[in-house]
Image 1 (cartoon, one colour):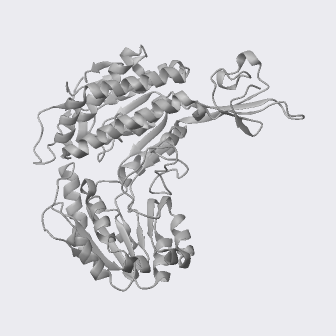
Image 2 (tube, one colour):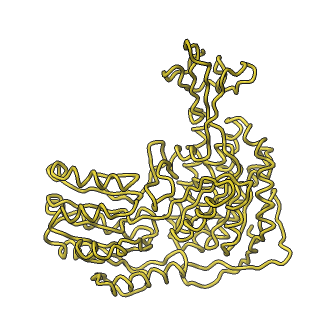
Image 3 (spheres, rainbow, N blue to C red):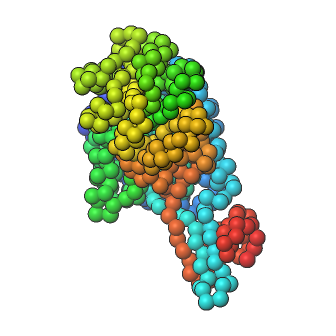
Length: 513
């Protein structure tokens, strides 16, 4: 049941002088009936203090205990599925298939972390023992402390309250203070209540998870600046992410701020492939429109190496469908504004419909973009800028000017790839994931996935926000030198009581010392 209250220590917390807001029906842009209380600065501070208070206890729970907790979250979500998805569709406007798919993905990524905890290698136990002239050295990873997570606007489930940032932090042994996205406040609160029920059933301290509502920046900045907070997970716009990142770095004790802030995800189409593969326009067109373009891996930039860009764009537009709603009126309004600005700067717009939120393809030469690099900024919606040149040398210059990206895609024949190794190498330096077939939309939740990239795509290119490796953001190494056996953590004991894989004198093994 949605009550619009902030949830701290497993209880609804009243503000002394509450200010309130509502979410919107994404389809008709009317306000929904539920009223939500903005968290006060005092409530935000209380949640941070409480998370820090329970950190010692939670960080010392066993991996098995945390795996049971995550599994219970999954059970609670499944039980509340109908209620959650009803609110999800109201606030997002996404169709039933998308709702079901994102819900399933959310459950699947929780299960991935359950499996990771049960398997145990995430601890990264490394031991150098019995080596003449070297002390007994044993190292493993420990949780860093309380984490603030910001819910995302475009993925109300998979990147939000019980999304990858929250679940990976909880798996690591870090308490979480969740700042719900104001566009999806009802969905976020329902999911938060499922997590709180799971804590209760697992007999864990309720302070491990708090949920705060808020449409104002003050709540978020207070959380990031609080001295008891030790890390932040964020998915959203560059403007908001950079502002919060600056707060995190200017603290008396700076903290890691892991932000994924968007990307244009360039698709490079090389000459032979452009001529020989007639399926490319339809494939890319479908990707542009997926989720009304509200994916962080939406192909927002298409680099065409060839002499017939008009034909390519025509085919692209032929495959455009009808306009669909976006997750919030403000996002829709900003999309229209950005499209108009591009047209005023010389971009030729191609579309089937003049309706709001309709898919649009822009066309401009690479030479023009080199003179106006601001044209490379992300347009959040069903838009892609087709940049063309007959010269791969000019395309190479443009790639060198690209800011950091989450993904890049190279579509080329075997001959194309052989002839453009340097071009592809330059592109590789700009991204966190490079594809050689298909389209960038779609992110697999597994250990090998990397969802991050050089700034400004993310704030730390060494880490991913998707997949089981994302747990590494919330862990830090501690080395034990010549530690008495009785004081060693179980993961580093000679007899390997946890039966996990460890690196022992440079060999991966489950053997005893």
